[in-house]
Length: 356
Image (cartoon, rainbow, N blue to C red; front, side, top):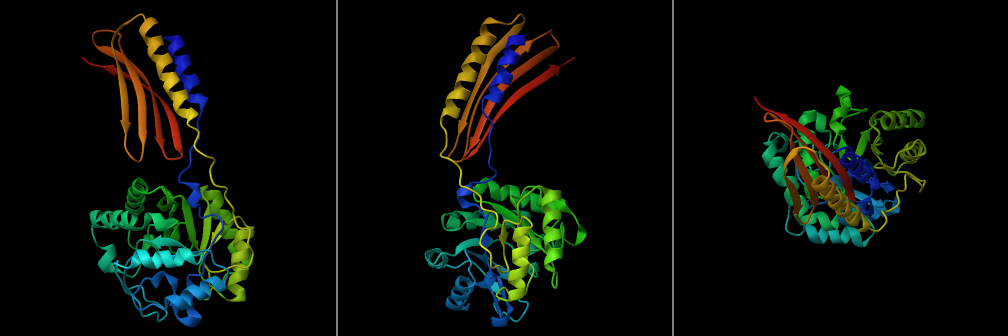
């Protein structure tokens, strides 16, 4: 039995790496200008049939943008006189997203608006259905998602965590969470970010560069997650907005949503090509464990349980052996390899059962 445990621990250490998302679609370095109040534009409403799409695209490119924020639905977020407060998915959206990608503006889909009770009061099942449909239709054309804008205005941390977790079963693109002003929003509750890949931080208005920098550093230190400085100015094309965006980047933010003038901002290299040697390590470990269990135990044991489960999204390879210690007790020991895209993990499984 001792030898078996040593073999399993060695197997766990053979390789262990993991990415929360496919970094080929990283939001590190992203640059957007979603608020342009001088033109009464909010790029979130770009997909509205009446939006000035050419004007928004040209303005974003002129401001140096690499990404563009888009609502997938809206039921009333219409502040600032944008007059585009009602949005629902349309048949031509694939074409609209292709247009944006063709000019170098990578879409980031914001799946839930604020000020839209007709949407946010719907059931969690309805929210999940919308998330799933947006991924089904548009995942190949977008670089990431934000589950909700100012989520803490209408949902609890548990609800947001559930929706983010659901979304991450549908896509390997990065997922962010955006709250009201401040770290953790107006409630200061950072558990909203629990399952997210990115913190989309709102700073409030009339902040100084020093205040923005301090808030970025705090958010990174508290959450341990990459921070996108997503909302800090009404007019993203102003010199003041760019200064705030620059300060955020210099403090460690990995992207901006209201303009900046500097280019370096949290570059993240894409992952290396997948190393299929990992499969051989895992398979070899399972063979060693199986042989060790077969020839080296002193207790009555049931058969070896092998598990292999695979879909288009993940694969699981595992082995488990159960030892009958007494009539009332048994001990199970196993090893499992789980892989989903670039997320590879090994687990040692042990359990003790007692009945009377």
